[in-house]
Length: 515
Image 1 (cartoon, rainbow, N blue to C red):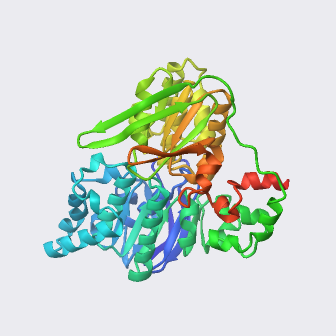
Image 2: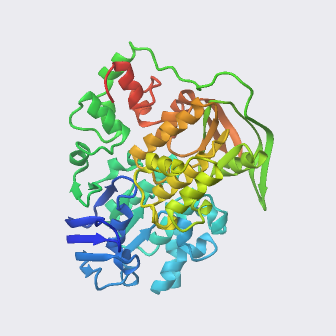
Image 3: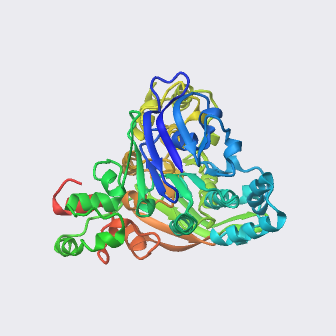
């Protein structure tokens, strides 16, 4: 279905190609997951499949890419629209209509699908993705996760033979992500659709994958079975990291498979003390206290009389399904004390306004009265090397997020509010960011993180607050809250249940081994 034959691609002015002399084939009905570090070129690889690369992006592509027998050299992206569906990292940027129902119908209108068929497909897609109640909603009023589901649905209504997904679950809560991936898996197995998905949240997708496409960052691309690739890849979900530490063979890729190996480990850990957890600073008045927070939009109450207190040295994870009011609460808390609180929104690019990364970093240092190079050093720590001359809008989602995080953090705010801060971050970059968050807490700052990333919560959170319908439905120590929930429990907790171990690092420390 998809063939790369000796493909090399590089952007104009770049020092090295994104990928070099790449050859592989993806058969009809395969689900392939593309992995690699932030900014390594995963989105570029997807773009080469539907012709956006190089017809839209520019650059030089050699070799041959064919999709269902059509060469992307000869066919423009519009000529492949009936065969290839593409959902990018920023769903809102791809919308062309005003409401959910109109967006689902748009591509079919362009392809000349009969009205009766259009109506049927719209209804099927609404049910498939669980968004029927959103049909009349304006797209800009949806949460980030709701927008992502609509974007996937808009592509599915055209019934493409190839589906390209760039970070398809990054803005979805765990239950919604599972629903979407299950729906995608049904398309693969029931209809034979070929799916290629670039994803950082590997714990969500690897057990669905037939093959993994690993981009190494030096222009190389390796394609293989998931067990073969994760046997050597530094990027791996917690279930694989735990299995490698315990030398389980064959390598399990799911919680179910891992639990079959885990009984001896559970027995050993039962004899070890559970890890001590708690915030870095254990005294002092709350840095922020809010009572009866109410956020109301026309026709919608987003936050209903919520009480919140943020203590110094505390990392609080704000969780809940898409549309539960997390982002609205963060904005309300920020507005209560704009002098002390710094907010990184879900769309971090909204805070970037200069024409190069170096200009943004220099302006950040100047505004924060910091030494020159302070912001750039923090960017490198978060996401690795970024071209200083690149326009911020040309960065990957993860790189752009790292830049904005650095700009906000260098000001040294007492209260740090983060809305989905791990979107687009690979596991290595996410661990670096976790270190930064822990350091902020150790300095006595309060950090609140709205996130669907349960593995990140397991690494950094002292307390977890769960929202539903604009109200707080759970509030307590991280281990207590997440381990009591099938949706919010990290992989290690599921494998070692009923004991409350959250991360591979905790297990390694208890056993006295290196993770």
